[in-house]
Image 1 (tube, each protein chain N blue to C red):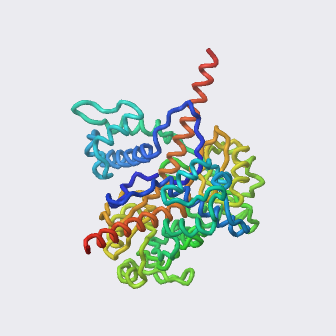
Image 2: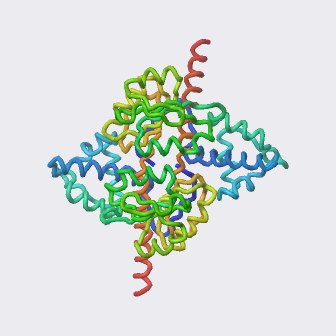
Image 3: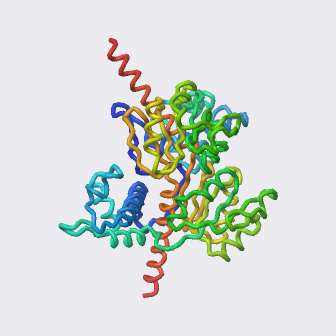
Length: 230
Length: 230
């Protein structure tokens, strides 16, 4: 993960990121099961296709409430409703996409957002060659319109895909416009007021992390083969 | 973060992901300082622009070795070389890009990879309309050539940007071809052998996590305003 400081109010206990991530997976799995006509499920069967153990499933869900029924397991309909509410995905989130380069374009087409109720309703860029272009029933708008458009369309979340050099100044514009959360793809740390939530997604750092794991794994193989040759 | 199980050999002690993430940021900052003519730096000055406290900087670097000099701080040249070596970014990593949809295209253009020594040297897709297309001096190749090309070009890492339904089967092909690490963008858990490193980047889950934080933050404001109205 990025090391960007993630602002959150000190008074509210948040479930850890890894737990929320798994619960999102459970939710997807539950929706799949429902579409197949299932009505109840055990924690073991819910976790199995996701490679999560049943004790972990129960522990994760316990963060959000008491959902299991002895001898029955979980009622799929009830659990879906409850989890969608807890995660805040029981309503639509209007998103702003800021920065319409390659990554911005990819995010616009990313099915994983739309299917979860995240809907891009505005696109911004400061490149005159891009402003005015029509994509997906939207028009790319200049950064100068950001504040007005964000307020008019009641946009709460933003995908920030601008170059690192301008990430902070554009984030400041989003905050001034009243956005409540920013998913930051720019490899730059952001300073945001406490009431604005921030998650940083630094793809370069993810790849560096992977390279580091591979390097360590090779070291261990090397050491093992040296040890065995003595 | 994704909840995909991340395979790593049990015998090697890995620095936590958050530490590696920050160390990557220090490395970028050090390279910037060197380009500005600086030769030494204190932990406080290194951390400040990244919003990381000096005690944290020292603690993070201590995972990888003893780098500081009393009264001097860190020698920038030495620290850059050491960190690049530790992170495995002191040499080039040939990458395969698998899946050439919108996200694949964005990753191909992502400057954050190239500047860190990660070089995409092969692109694969199974869509006949894409196979054979020339981009960035590369030709999109069919999945059927994957094994042969990965071996011939000594590709060690792969960016997996295929639909979730086929992610496991394509990952199996990459493993069979001898890839050592996979950065998985498909929202699907993968089962890989222990010797292959895996990091999952589920963008939809990141956005759900952000929505959850915003929702919790609003709850807390709501509760605070209710409390104050009694």
